[in-house]
Length: 372
Ligand SMILES: *Cc1c(COP(=O)(O)O)cnc(C)c1O
Image (tube, rainbow, N blue to C red; front, side, top):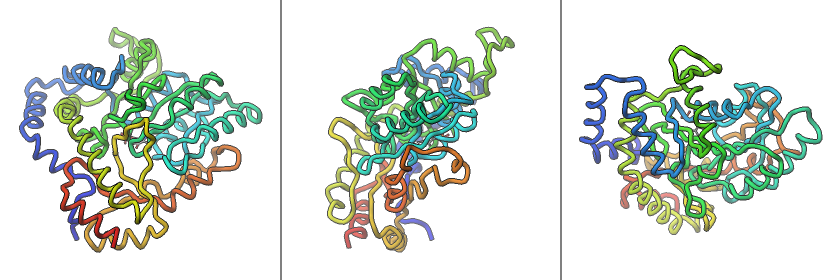
């Protein structure tokens, strides 16, 4: 049974910019520089202007972007990295695979983002009761809303720990009028197809205003090479972005701001019409979400999923389990007292279809089914 309404409609976007995408792909096929072709640098420059980050390094995925960022900051065995318990597994996996210890921090009930008070408690606990060094925090902008980066920054600075912003879901989001990824020492995003800015495969980027860190990331992306080929200064990865993906992203970036505006309008319509039936998302007044997901809370989740499914409306549960309960991460510590809010949110959240091409009739249908 096909869904009546796609959860994310990449086909509609493709129809809107068919020629631009075809020309972008054709251009790469013509010059044939599939690895580190000219579109990579072109994309990095375009993203730098768009995001106001002084340095942008395109790479192979959002997860690899996090690994590159952590490696550049020398995070590894003995490092404690503070991570929200309520996020995608990739955030914690990037730290764990380097031998660092993810420490799970609870989130805020209303914004779903890292709780700064709980972060402080977790840092104090590591400093007083373990042999680990409190090294970095990875703040995630969940569902597109910037986390409380100003408070997180104050706490990080007091404790001399680095700030990484996992903006995989929030490219285009703002905090006090600035792109949220400007608030980290180093920030990352993902261009996975369903993210706000997505390519046609895997892709990601690292953003930083620190030129030294940027150079390290550039080197790590290509086997730790220096400027001269076959000279390796550090142990690195192959974490390059394909030229084809860069060309596709350049075409999509041109319509991105318009798409973000459309998402705002669609979220607004949901907010106004659903607020009496479910708990609608809370966006702090000084923030602008990129609305990668529209996530509500409901006590009758299973029943609502079933009702929407019967009406051919797809939904998703991001995330059904907090990370500290996943088999891969159970052995890692949490903030003192555990992560009760993350645990509770995992039982209530439900994400509804949102994308820039969702028409009013489809949205009215979704609203009608939820409100009936
Ligand atoms: C999607 C996502 C990632 C991973 O990005 P990939 O490009 O799929 O590797 C990391 N963190 C968060 C919060 C994400 O949503």
